[in-house]
Length: 633
Image (cartoon, rainbow, N blue to C red; front, side, top):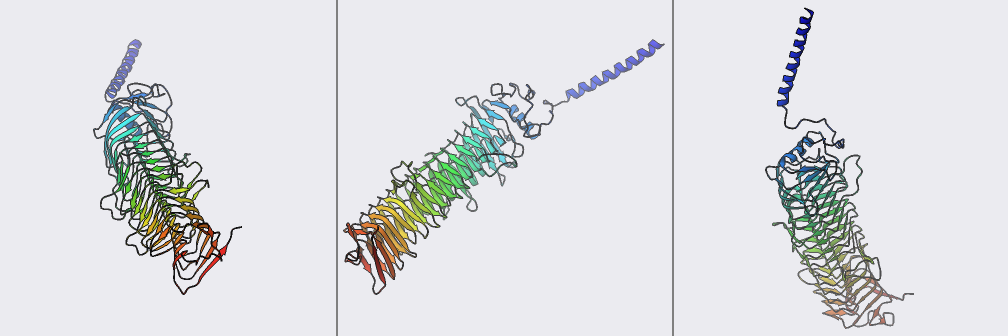
């Protein structure tokens, strides 16, 4: 009896075990292809155990570049995307090796801005890059590309992407490689081709945050941004970073743009550049906008950057691409061969524009910068013909608010501007169109001269160095050898070998040898002084001067005082209705200081006064005209 009871209990247990195994078998048959893994908080590294993600990837273990998980098809890409989206991992520190991929079937990007990819994604090598075909048409996600977001310390290299990326969301950021490049992430040795469209669009990346690096890469894609557009990135911003994250300023280096870049907005923010639409607290180094590229916009438009601000640095960059304005725009402004706008202590150094920029309606147009407002330009030069309307210059359309243009002992170009500068209106200069707000032009190495050797043609204030210079500004260590012409419909056409119209600015250590011509006032050094007291010192003219009022040094002086110190001119160089070997015309009450001033080597003094016949072309009487003579000790 006991044996029978025991046997019965055993059979009941055996039956229960059988039932349990049957249930397990049923459940196992219903499992998805990939089993779920314990969550690893985003931003945390994997455990580093061999085979941790083996169920998702057919080859490799992801622990090193040599044993990287191999990404050879859409299934592997899908696994990456879904694991990140689930919050299981961000793949920080995990290696992936990409082969050639076709991702053109309604592709959804890997990662987002909130849940980015933080791993390492590489092609086989720089000599054997993975070729990826991509098509993204996103209407919901803010950041799109092959990756939506590349997060902290992510790395992408050795891939070439071709295809199209579109983002129709109002604040969409798009790039072929990523919508956003996060803190300290890096992209290197990559290229892209095809097309990118978004509100903020870049050939490689929509936006680069603090610490992000893009280097040794190229864009061949056509990039269209509603507001920001750049051949490499729509915007690079060193002030954007994750809370608590330490990050250096972001950098784009040794990158080339061959693609057409355009912005379509006719109002609001419109920043377009061959490398970056906007650079804020960032560095762009050894970057090139190539001859094949056309950059199209309407405001803050540049061959390298549309707008450069907040201490950004552009160094050793070149523009050879075409710069034009959006069709139908009637008032394009802030346009430059290197950058459209330069502000907030940003610096351009050792950079050059070689492209012709022909935008007849443009204001604030320069070979290097359209408008510099507290920005500084150093050792940079222009070789491309520049044509605009007003405030047009070989280096900058305008310098304001303590902005500077300088050359140092390291400057090696033959001239700061060596091209034709043309403006259909006023304020046109071989170096700068107009100056205000204590801005300056100077050579830090005084043995060198800031030189204009190109023709300058304007309608109004036109100068070999500056068209118009206001009170508080200084111009020194300059030389003009180009012909300067002010002619047209302006009420007062004024041309000067150095400055067209000087209103309170200080000029020193400058020489002119070029021919100066104006319908009205022409001066070998300055065309016209009025509005505030002027000073011209240590300057000389040997060029020919022709105008209704032509002076070997100054074309016209009206109702303000002017000091001439160590100034020299040559007689026989002026011609016109009223011409003098020193001043073309004096009108109103003026006091003139003449210290160590010479005509043909003869000192102006009480014995040889400036009122000597032929020294002044015209002065109206009666008036109060008081010359004072002095000699430098």
